[in-house]
Length: 316
Image 1 (tube, helix red, strand yellow):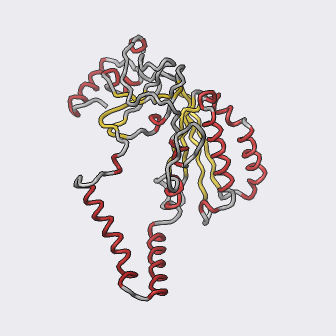
Image 2 (cartoon, helix red, strand yellow):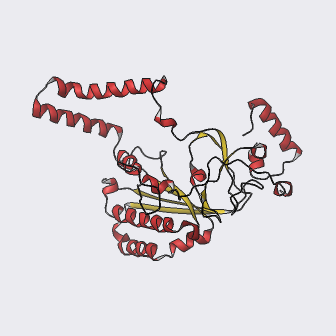
Image 3 (tube, helix red, strand yellow):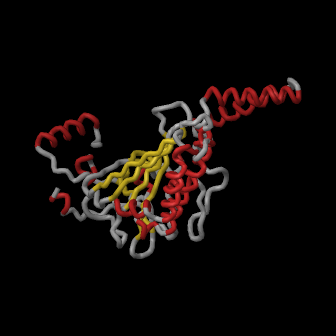
């Protein structure tokens, strides 16, 4: 690892420094708002839309739509518009998809995509992106909730849990630099059930102590107390958390044709008061996973790497 530690290469960041602190992906998806921060997006929060869709199976949503059409026909009769409306809407969406696919109109799914390969490298306090890869230690919190109740998110206790967790993240966002909060993303487990799935939040922190400081903050203690007083009636709720302490030189990532995601959504504050993303364009120093983790390869490992590169055309 010593050879990598001596590197003083300067890397090219994907984004210029932000004068205004960006929201974490978690907070942005919930339309959080505060003075001096980016304005929330208009419309329904993204998380709400995704979680609502997950409450019912596909067949239940189809039956709900069919029932709505039956209701329209019952009220207005089997008129052309009551029968043709769903066909018209579906047809317009199909045409839109074809136009996006052929490049006639903009494909919104490409918004924010960064072409090529990027990785994460945290800037120094002076805003410089330099030094060996995997250059900072961090702590990662995985915390999840799942309702095992027929009412899903409307089950007893879910509202209180959501309010408590949102309040905790708002507290972190209020002074994220001092509180060691780097960012957070949200995910739905798609490998277990067809509906009413586990909601996972992944938080990135400067250290485990920053996570523990949150746990012992008054706003979390209040939620903790409520849970312990109510848990006898909350057997239908699943709560989990995992914490990983990650030393520098012990993590790596690569993103190909990707919008900022995972660790790439985090930001740090420099001595100049500006906020910076860790995303950089990959360089020869990041040509392989071993390089990005500052691993010194044996001759056999180097040979294996070269064989893979020759076969695939590019190191991963």
